[in-house]
Amino acid sequence: MNFQEYTEEASKTAFYPAQVNDFRLAYLALKMNGETGELVEALTEFNLYDGEKANLTVPKILKEAGDLLWYTSQAAKLIHYIPKSFGFTDYFSDNKYSIYNYVDLLENSTNSIAEYVGKIYRDEDGFLDTSSYLGILGLMIDRILRALAYIAKTFDTSLEVIAKMNLEKLTSRMKRGKLGGSGDDR
Image 1 (cartoon, rainbow, N blue to C red):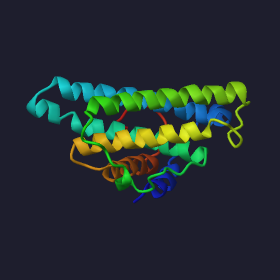
Image 2: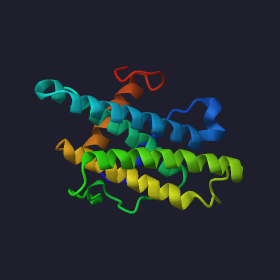
Image 3: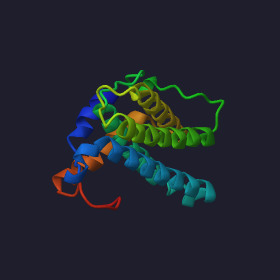
């Protein structure tokens, strides 16, 4: 599975409240920031605990990474962006950096997306197709994918495995009519 295949499958589970239709990119940017916060919280819990208790946080980390991947993929689709590294395995993560560098990269990238999406609505009346900010949004999406790949590698898995886990979770929710609402275990 590559990013485009994941994006197409993930979009089958896309559910947007009617009131956000004209502001879908802004909604996605807000959700990306929220999911980044949840992922950072899970990573913090992992670092606070030892042994078995730390291991119990790993599934939560991978779920949150999958949720961020979902919102990132839908933002990429909305702006018609195909990542430079088309396959999930193409995201090489340098070992010279620590996970903290990649957490920083995630936070900075999702914050930048929110900032530039705000400018699209403020300065360009929300016109995505002609926005001068699309290139920077694409760069930020690539940075998010690179950080997620590193986090996956840190926990001995891959971005492709996280994508498949995320699709399984969302497909199950869709079959049960539970895409809307809140809570990880619905």
